[in-house]
Each structure stands twice: as structure tokens, then as C-alpha cells.
Length: 489
Ligand code: BES
Ligand code: MN
Ligand code: ZN
Image (cartoon, rainbow, N blue to C red):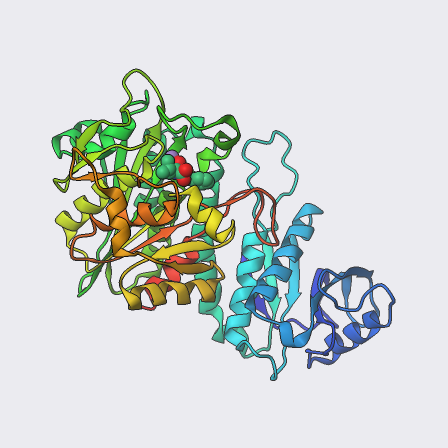
């Protein structure tokens, strides 16, 4: 769907050409593009400021039916996210008008701060992601995605950057897979169905997979997962994905929270907070989609993906606050609140993966706490780790992909708050403050000897309003982050 071309603008017939334009710099060295930009800047209504937009039909300079100019803003403010955003808008606008393809000009300016390869990648990412909408449940399918998105580059670059195109399609394809899973309503992704959907994609990529059903979870003593599932009519699952190249020295494991709907259980959420709780499997979706993308990228390390999947519901068979369960790892846990269900399924998945696969590094992704959203807002994830390098590597990948991460503390003395009078540990903190931290500290008790990090994605996993390259619904946050991180290991 993405491709690179060095087509001649004077002789090639183009339906829609998109030209990103800077406010205070020419940025193109090609004579046709230069004159197109020069001509459009003479118009009052277009200066190249961020958000500026104008369409010109049949310009004399090129054989294009229409040229859409989009403003980038000031030259010194250009970063990769500006390029992602402008191409996302371009794809969104053109798909919205039912065009079937576009060609986007890539600025060529030696003074540009981000490197050529990175700019090209960001532009492709933005366009690819912005081209997608979740319309499965709309009877009338407006916004048909563009079938082809081309990028106008130099002749020698078509070959040179071909690998970029396939990388973007694979990794961002994973992001879109995760977005669709998250946006799917909970009645169509009960644990069994979600597990089946993951496995269907995994099988296509030759990933090894295993699905543990309720019986097997019971046999293996994964009781914390069973406890959360007990209130629901829909039985739990755990999906295990294994990417194992022939000669690997390292094993990393990624674990994702897969709560297909979080009602809060016996601690039922107030109605205002229930609406978007189909999003509570976003960690699991990101982990599964990243595994599926990585299986195609073929890294040299072994990667295990684990997704515990449950529905958290209140009922006569549900677990209650005060109940005590024994985790897979052995520690007894007093349940503080049935709305703190994510950490319970995560600890069993983590302990199981540690015992079975002995990973050197373990990362979990979870829509874990509202407190993390209070702290960092809806766009930034919280990273918790006592491993400096691991935390820094994740945060660096967050910068590269603009899936932003911010380091949060794991103070030892706060563990005090998780003391239980009756069991080894309590699942929730005794203070209402610092909820994202106590949740992370609870998980840390089950990380064993692995280098571990927890990423709380409760904020950035879901879009209530559309943004430049993501519609309303799941954002697929974590897929590009995890792929970038794994590729730099
Ligand atoms: N899934 C929620 C966290 C959440 C909140 C995700 C808002 C997305 C948006 C989680 O299971 C939860 O309910 N956490 C509780 C923990 C509390 C009971 C200790 C919370 O954050 O209130
Ligand atoms: Mn909850
Ligand atoms: Zn939850």
C-alpha cells in the first residue's frame, strides 16, 4: 500500500498530489515543486503555518488534477511528530473524500534537523496510521481507506529506502490490529473470542502459540486469574506466544493485561466510568500485535508474549474484597478491591512466564490505574522500573516513536501500604494516594529475578477525540514502542 517513487511531475498524470510546506523556508530542491510552492505562497490564505490548507486544481507547473498544500509551521520547530501529523491529516482528508490514492512530496532540505531516513519513516507512519478508521459496525462505509499512498523521493532513494516501507507496513499494521481489537465492543470480544482472534493472526505469522482454557488454568493453579474471572459467565483464557529463532542468547517476555470489560466487579464502577472499559485489554492487544509484527521482522532474540484474558463482572459467584487467594507464585493475596483486577491477572501471568521461560527481561503493559492518568494525563504512559537502563531504553523508544513514556518512582518504603493483616500481601494500598505507584509496587513483588518494567497505559491507550493520525477508539499505543525497543536490543 505504501510505495516510493521518483515520478516526473511534468509528465506523470497524478490524481492528488500533497505538498507539505514550511512557513519560513522553501525546503524543496526540485524545480517543479519549488515553483508550485512559490506560487501557492503568493495567495493570502496560505502561508504554510501549522493547520494551513489549500487545494489548487490543474496547476500549470505539473500534470496533477489537484494539489493539496498543507502547512508545517516554522522550520526550526520541525520534528518527526510534525511530519507524522501532517501525513496523517493528508491521508485522513483524502480518504474522507473517497479518493483512492495520493502522492505525497517528501521535502528535500540538507539543513533539516531530523535525518532523511527518519523523516521518511515518520511520514510513512503518519500516512499509514491516518488512513485507518474503525468502521466495522457502520452500515454505511464512508471513509474508505486509500488503496495506495506514494511518496515522492529522489531516484536513488526508491531502492535505498525500500526496507523502510515494509517495516512501516508491518509495525503500523500491528498498531492498527491493536486499535481494532481495542475498539471492538466487549460483547464481541469475550475472552474466548479475543484469544481466538489473537491465535488466528499468530498462526498466519508462524508464531508458536498456546491457549490455556479454564480447565488448564485450574490445573496449573493460576488462581488469581480464575478469581477475577469468577464473576463472569465467560470463562478466562491465557494466550502464550513464542517467537523462538534458532540461535538466540536472550529471552525477553512481554505480558499484557487483557480485561475485555472492566465493570469493577463487586466494587462496581459508577456509570460515568464504565463507558470506555472495553479498552481494558489494550495492554494485551499491544503485546499480541507487537508479537505478530515482530514475527515478521525476525529479530535474533527469543520473545515470549503472554496475555491473560478475563472479563471482570459482579455476580453471586464473584470474588469479594477481603477474600484471600493463593497466587501461582505462592504468596497469598488479600483482595482489597475487586476493581483492582488487572494486577491480579498480571501477577499470575508474570510468575508463570518466569517459571516456564526464565526471561532475562520482563515488561508488562497494562491499563492499570486511573491514578496514572491523573498524574500524566491522557497522552503519556508511566514507566516503573528499578532497572535504570531498562527504564531509559523504554523512554528512548518512547521518544523515537512519540509513544511518550515518563519515568515514575518505585519507593521501597511505600511497600508498607501493601501490608495485609491476614495474608502475605494486600492487592491495593491502604492510602488513596499514589495509586499508580502502589499498583506497580504490588507487581514488583512478582517479578522474580528478571529485569522488569511496568508500563501503565491507562491514559494513552484510548482516544476519546480523534487526533492527526488516530481516530476515536483504541490507539494501539505500545506496539510501535515495543517493536522499536525490541529492535534495539
Ligand atoms: N482498568 C482500570 C484502570 C483505568 C482507569 C483504565 C481509567 C483506564 C481508564 C483498573 O482496573 C482500575 O479500575 N483501577 C482502579 C484501582 C483502584 C481500585 C485501586 C483505579 O484506578 O481506580
Ligand atoms: Mn478495574
Ligand atoms: Zn481494569
